[in-house]
Image (cartoon, protein in one colour):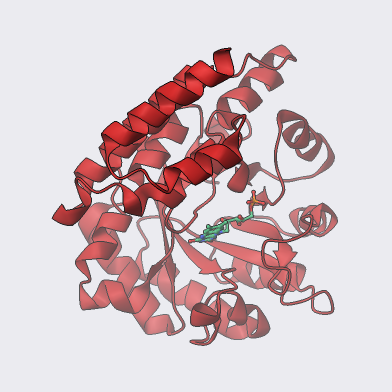
Length: 327
Ligand SMILES: Cc1cc2nc3c(=O)[nH]c(=O)nc-3n(C[C@H](O)[C@H](O)[C@H](O)COP(=O)(O)O)c2cc1C
């Protein structure tokens, strides 16, 4: 058993989300009660080449532990070598392998969700990686299948377990679905019954009642939350509070939300190892838009963000928005 699954009642994972779950965002979610974090995926071959930007991507702080680093690739030996390099350099608590990414640039190199079409190779990758880092657990993240005619999560889950994976995260959508439609929790529940390693369920979780239902009705050992956390990192706090007290806590005020957004923006800009990113806020826009999505008047904010060039402009926009919503 993984220590964070036995110690914690029903761990809430923050989903890995490329370009969004940077170390500062992870810290924000951790401070709001996320239990386990996984970095966004990094390509095994690029790690081996020594791409400096990737080390920035997988950067984490001690307080973010238990922390996994997610890798993707197609060649079992390269995946093993990358896992070993990562373990030697930054000692994460686990290595997670991505078998879910639907993007063409990933599937065309026979990695991510395309490996769901080749379960024996998927198993081989898990075995090689597990043997390369015997000090820590190796886990896998899959989708339920390639398309609705090929739902193979159970078969893949059994292979993952046999080849040495210590937990399996299942995103309840197919590759063809991408990020659309509802996640299929029946398939996730079925796999959680069928295999002996912990299953972390993922997909369409938006509230404490979703988590309660999953906890009560499935054999999942925990859940992973994705997009709902991007717009509202307080979701972890809300879920924990609601499960404990049976009532939803007050949401943060608009002013508190802007404080968080500005703090986040300043922190992430200052950390970037690309100097040109320290002052110009433009590259941060998608991240800020994601964080304002659940606020009243989010469409207007989104338009206004188009002209924001510096942190000072963002502060001004925040003040105007707070004044307008307090009226
Ligand atoms: C912008 C974005 C980037 C993502 N990047 C990754 C990734 O790097 N690795 C991964 O395993 N999944 C990735 N995912 C998938 C999420 O981890 C999660 O499985 C998916 O969003 C479903 O959960 P949700 O319905 O709660 O959003 C990404 C999703 C989004 C929206």
